[in-house]
Image (tube, rainbow, N blue to C red):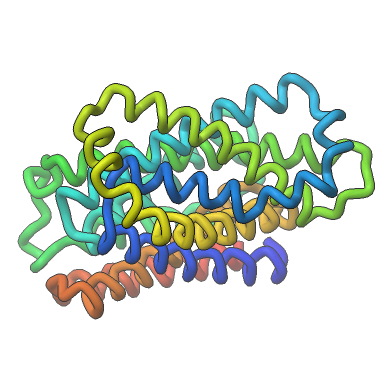
Length: 301
């Protein structure tokens, strides 16, 4: 991983933890994330004025990848909303952010690209997962499967599957977009991909909401008061993931990007403890240290 990619991912990870904290405090619902997604589209839609010719060159296969990535991102938001509504940020967030590393690495090996991952990077990714398992504990005797058999953890796993899905597809899609002829710079292509994916994500979220009367009632009752916060969250989300997409163009393998961006795990856990008053514990701080060590190994790998 280049220094440019590492710095971009660190910036994105810090911003990611911030908007998750805001979402947890304001309204962890599908409707809120729909408003945030629409906000991302509105904030970054001017990119269409400079990349219209590039869109005309996009093959049908790339549009299919965008539609599939949007589906997985909608899965991610749905799982995240449910996990935050049922549990603490310091528990749901680490699980939702760490498990995708394992899933993406497995997909990398299935795709025959496992030789691109160094031993130190694999060890670092394992450390990230181990630290995330330790992180939710109140004491070291809490390592029991029953502690993870609850709605919040189950929905955090759903969010993790969504993250792994769109991350893997985005790596493919961004590389396809990068190779298309045209004068658009790399950051413009990243923003175009981001906005197009968000359009598909918004469509999928609307479909998911159609099966949830509670979500529809909630957004109808609180839509006006949530519009402003949703738009601002959309700006943060767009900037965060736009930076990640750009970082992918500077990294050899998507697993490095997905691994290093887990820096948001200790940041998010600390924000939950310090700003939301969630319980801190020795295992949680040990988990943060283990995760940080793993991230260093991923970055050096």
